[in-house]
Image 1: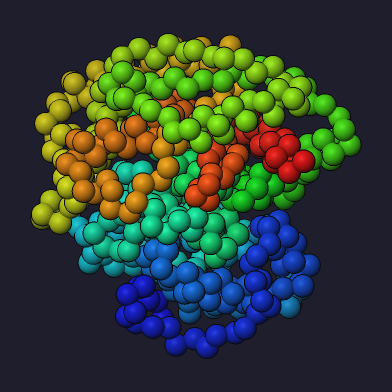
Image 2 (image 1 turned 180 degrees about the vertical axis):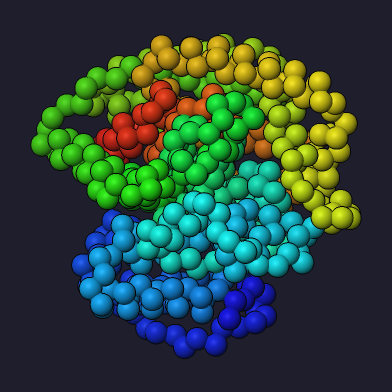
Length: 483
């Protein structure tokens, strides 16, 4: 029996105890235990469901379906017992953003306008791919309304909170997924990123994320245009864990072991004392939102960036200051393109009266912008992307902060008027959306914890097709931090 996390429609399934802290291990370790038969899919699924309920105060989940998850896990175990070869992600528990269709579960887009939505008839193609790979779907995770914001708060579910400080937002829009991974409920989380929606919550929750380049994940829209901002990718604890999920997301066959083995080879070479091939790494704090938005970096954001640069330089890379020229129109044009996506969403009749203030403002703004003005903004942003990609191509990797300031308290943004809210979000996350516009891959890596226990991350932006090398570079940083 499905349930919402308001206490209604409780599950009739009986708990099945598993080993203590069953999920307190890496995704790769859990995957190995499932693949070998040391753990059963049902055992792991029950442990994840128990953890989801124990961590309910984090607001990670908007919907759980324990009976369906346990039935799916039991079917995997039964097939295994008959001699079937386990799939590439056999028994690994996952959950999906409330922006993605999962058969049998409602898709509400974090919006009261869809509160009466019935269950989806079929899986989104990426959900189907990962289900075919053996993942067990627990439910849906909390998102901002329509995935628009950098904080996962809406009018239909509890806000997603970072486990590092539950008074603060887990970020957005994959906020619920990141909170679940950071809290040990999920081993990793598939998510999506249209302007930082993987990287922002990963940074807020002290996790690693990989935003692939445009067209890398076959189930994503592959049109090479700034109108295609959203890509799918993983949030995980480590580069190796992210590689495990990404290789299934990017290949119909899952290519078992390819990316994971690449990361392991990097680790083995570094542990053997081999120096990596020197990369040109450009370090920058410039943001395309400036000067329209005042960008002020907190001291730990600068400390994390400086530390990353020093570690990479000590490892043999050439790290130098980099000063790209972004012009002055990015803020205006990105906002036009970002908000115009609402016009493509089929809203139910009378939806406007159920929308939150930011979505209402964005929809009104998009409707007030004529098609010629929208087309002109797209054209200017395409030109901007070409020009900035050419500057970035002078480097092998561009190194930036992720968040300019700490994740603010829950409710911080919602207390603002919509236009002030949007500008404040840009100031909070000044380095992420530009990577979507350019269509480049980027990995975010947690670098340090401050005195309050909050995590601070850096972003490594690569050239097209360098998702694997970026995970290798992230592995370098992980090893250097652990040394």
